Length: 305
Ligand code: BTN
Image 1 (cartoon, protein in one colour):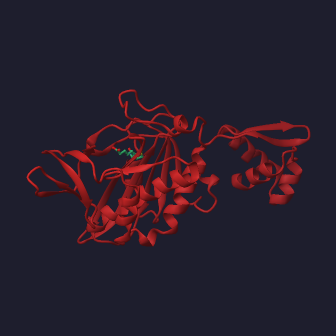
Image 2 (image 1 turned 30 degrees about the vertical axis):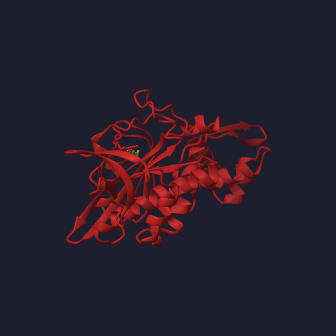
């Protein structure tokens, strides 16, 4: 109902009466008023005049009703500890494939390698639950698929030259715009669910402790409507998902990559290696040529160019 009321208000710059809304939507005026009140409580500025209701402005919040196609699968929260936790709970309760958990703020946002992901208001923080029965070796490809799709969305919809740093950071001019984290549970040889968490600095000021981070707002010199960015990404992500496990994903990732050809330092929990990033293999591992010419295969880690 909220989605339909909003649609009518957006189509009509002039006030539209409660009577008209109730006859078009075939519900009582009390029901209309209840939903209008709900929208106002969610920060939609709706003027209630003698002539009817008029939408003055609306928040950029990715409420479920803002994406009619995915309405049933989107779980929006004002604030959560981490969308990863909520998504894991839902996945364990058999939520549907491509469930999306999105929050305006995370109190305990998590980054890779047990880091904190500062998640203030203005950023876009979400986790997608994937239920693709697959052997765990395909996980790298799916993550590469997600980061390539995000780079593509940022380039094509927002005109920013987004590159991917191994494994899945999105950089613009060497500064971090987005990070990705994935978690999975498996049973036997097959993955039961894979959750991909994505954090994008959109209208938030990245944490001052991260001087090499940047926001979309500062790149574009204007605020960005987060609900539009989320939908643009999901449209692309879901459209070609059947390709996500194919070898072609790696080639696609390489076209956006900022890592290969660089001299890199890769830090894992138990080692630090330095060398030249020469390639990624079909599982997404980074191949680093060491000083003595040997090739070291890195399956995870933080990569510094
Ligand atoms: C990284 O670069 O270290 C990965 C950052 C991933 C952050 C996202 S925000 C949405 C999801 N929820 C979290 O707690 N983390 C991921």
